[in-house]
Length: 447
Image: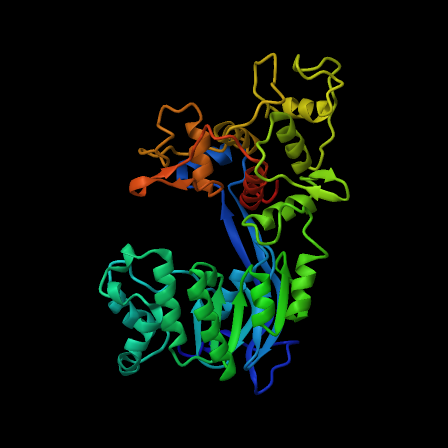
């Protein structure tokens, strides 16, 4: 990629810039507008009901740092901390709302799998397309084409349309193109985790070769062990702000803390960030087992426990407990009576029933309806064709489930023939509950 124009930059402010500075970021801010409606009809209905139709999310707030030429820097932080947004700003894919970014040299970004590829073109054609985007001339591409294909190890499929590629094949070809360009700065965002282990080792070896010749490296990854070995320096972000800038191993130590909150949810687990968020917010307390705490992520959650989690999600909101219990099977002596009565008073609990069934598990469809009620039942246009093959148009919770899909809170599972499943009758696990709540908080941050 050609050098990013400095027309969009000015004085880098407090950041010290030298002749060897490769990247200078000064007082950078980026805010996104979150829309809670998806059509004019939904917006009108929401305004009539007095609902909020949009809100803002500050992804980055006053970020400052400089990276010297040849440095290897890891951008660290939990999900939503602003790492990927910052990398896209450095690459020029996004522009800051305030502040300045200066780049010295040619830059290539492996921002996400398949970026810069056209699905209807073959792998061969996409090599030329992607390499041209990264600033290579046709003669340069011709000279390195065989090396690019050999490194990717997909020679048999190089003339196949890339829409038929797996994510791993995308990764191989994209990485191979990027590391065979003459770049001064290489940006890598998480995609190393997509390839198989032998290819990951091959990628890391190639990155070390680039480091040896003085290429500046900026990496975003949740693989803390890998970045602590690969990078000299770590910049830790929290809620869009830099909270630590120093040696990579110290940044990793600070991010991890002394140890994960729960012994059964290690940092390597897929939804570690969401579980740690729930623990830090006081939503999930786990179970005391001797001197350890367990979360028990795959255990199915009961209605009583869900009431407790939601009550904590709302900050343990105060309310007046009725003199007579709402449900016959939840007497005042029940250990979660207060939370269940709040559950009923807010209209979240099943209505018109004598018994709650506090020990009954909660399936995904019931939780979708509950979360939809919690959001105020926002207006939503139902699609002509269901999003999920196992949630037909006559499903009793269709509206809630389609709303959940439209907000991105639930993407479902890939099913045969390119379709998606919601699995509405599958019991909700403790881990899935906090993942849903975390996504819901991101969608509706004022909650």
